[in-house]
Image (tube, rainbow, N blue to C red):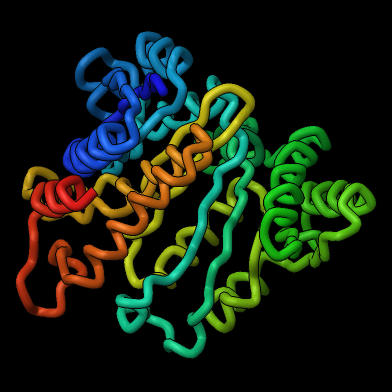
Length: 352
């Protein structure tokens, strides 16, 4: 199969971890007789520094012409620490999601047998955890009207959703539930927010279209609590943009490290695959960052982006092998030998 993949390394540790995912993907392509054309493009702070735009038109053209996008991370302290900055790396990410129609963020959370003791939660609470969040990406408070009044002393951010936006996200959730355990949880704040009441009404209307799926409705604060009590009680959860942003980061540490969780952003055109962690600027250039979340994002790309299940499984198998054999970066080390970012990537590619 011929595959055209847009490669957006981004900022901080992004280029380092992306390099390892490329190594592993190339090894998979060689093993399974695929032909990958990588198409690098600028985004985030790196793009601002180069051309003054966090998501340049040239980058959009490359992404739109690709079969998938493999993305590293964006963010830079010089923008984070400057509230007056008019152009920010994150603006590029939001524009990219909107321009590519990436309306659903798929964030799995699962445990690794060899790392279960590294979780901040007790072993008996997290064993068997295998859940997935679908977060709406292109609506809600992040995209609503925002501004300042009263000489800058009053600020507002509007949260707006349409029934069509809720329905298309919920449809993905129902379909995913049908392929798993047929359990779906709609996360909202319908006792307070009008947008949440729209979410709940819309999902309730859709239940009859998926009679085999058992649907529950929970307030976001209750889910935040239960995620650290009994995460294995959940399977597929759907929610709006802001709630999903917060809850998926909370869920990510169940496995023991944010450096292990992949994600996908899907839409009607092209899909994007990325690790859930940020740009971790403190580690940039030190060759110490954990590349496994990016490598596992490449596995998701092969599986869900291209329908190549065996190729994705080959990557996940070799990642599990590296964890079991202790071929890990310093964040996962128990005091023994640690490997650099590039050494982990080399080991994974060699073992594939």
